[in-house]
Length: 325
Ligand code: F6P
Image 1 (spheres, rainbow, N blue to C red):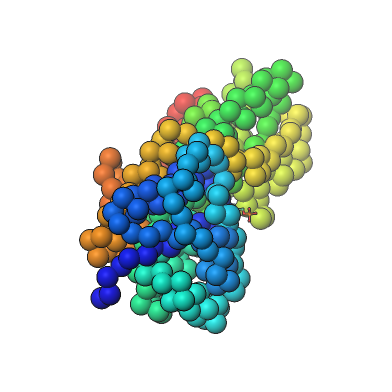
Image 2 (tube, rainbow, N blue to C red; image 1 turned 45 degrees about the horizontal axis):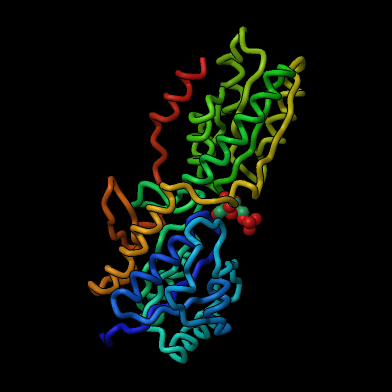
């Protein structure tokens, strides 16, 4: 295998707070270890189109505290095609990029896996998504910040819910995963969470209403995971029809959950996994995601990281149920 001298770094998919800290870590650790680092703009699109700049340590100064990504991001349809990936490979050859560090979520790492296998390219992934839906890491970069943002918003919603004695359905992001909903519900003292992991098993709304909006509670907060069919609006409409008498409101938090200054936890996670990515490349590792488990940097094969069944600890459901009586 040819010696790796130049490493490209990109962010792809939904931005997440802490991505900048990760770009900074990869750049600085890379330069520290004698590599040339090239920043690739707009994710896979930038690799296809050659939207690339050689980074110095100054290029990543003053960004650790910023949300979003200085490299920009995109969801590339062209990279989903073989022809798109071929163009990306040709750019790598033209630019002399020997390895890639890709920062993103499930879709990004799935793309990296396919690309790495097809063209025999060294790819290392960092878990960058607010959804926390990657396997083999305790948390993903951006998840903690988003949890705190949701908590702040729901604390405010609680004030008005209590004043007006209303039921609020608050919709949060997470794509197909309920981590944001379940854990923010615990952190906010919400009365219930409606999550995709439980969708097939039960009518979560009926169970919640049956369990009882406690008599002495005149207001309550239900956190609902986003869903094309049964998001917060769906449940609010059902309550209006099936349980008349309650004053119901909906609040969809939307993209404000993705912005903002990363928390200390996300900055540290991004910094440690970023340094871990350079270490992995030095060791000759490839096609792995760098995760963080119980205080240790770990290397997780892409095939494992992108499993779609990351386990939501069911004890969290008990915690919420028992504490919301
Ligand atoms: O994957 C991150 C995420 O924020 C999901 O939680 C959400 O479903 C999706 O991205 C929204 O994507 P977009 O910004 O493209 O609408």
